[in-house]
Length: 366
Image (cartoon, rainbow, N blue to C red; front, side):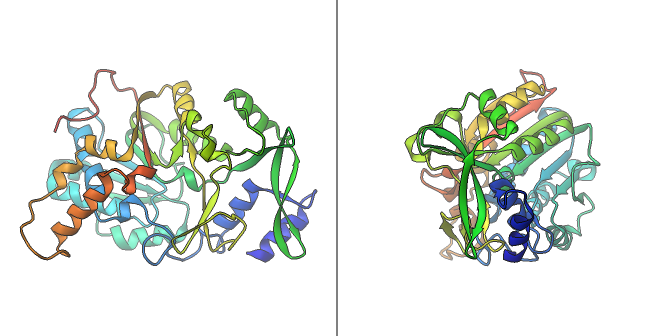
């Protein structure tokens, strides 16, 4: 990977590359990028956990809510998971529907979209027993979708541009090479797409404040929205509203790495071997959604959303003494997902709909 980066830098006109191009290279270059390699990323042998990897309660809660949308809200039995990774979340959702809803099961289509050949291979190994499961490298085949489209930690893994207010002026932060090491370099901001984004979103920075500009997120989101004819769009991720971005705690931006379950502040360390991530811009998604005829059904903390979706229905009475029984482990996972200070406190859930009547109740009363 380091040789590849050196070639990219040497081949660029100014002998530097944007953070956007750096992240794209270290995360997605075929065969050697972090997400493109045949390597476990999630779980104890990976570099991070997701909500879907903390037992099966997260997936079963989503499935329970999906069933409600299909049975009570008139949503078609088609589920598309964008950025489906290793298929663990899809497996939990499918198992729940198979066990509890035979009629929906017979008419269900579940599409797992992921650009990684390694992930699609793992999906096939895990989900090959289900004829309802279909793997796809992209959304291109799926247009005029009626159903449920959702993502879990998709947008935080997309490349971003990094800007900063430095000595009173806006600069873009680039990546270059110096004496064999990757280092940052500041140059006056002149990227018209970044400038347009800042003007449109009315973004102003304080001195020494860093800010990630998510142009890739916008393109990917618009691509997803364009395929939806009617139904639900659910975005689960960590991120901030515009108001939260202005808080002092976020003045250094949010770009960071995760390597062997340790947070690494220096994004230039371990290129190709470390996950890179940023907090996403929820208000941007909401505003674009409005322009694309989506109705905003709410931005929730993840634990709040899970309670609305019925996660407490997964709790079971447990009289046994074995702390490692399936019931005991699931109950612990549920508590970890809903208690203050637990796993869910880092995540938000954006719920949007298209061509559903405004009076349709998208959450049941448990």
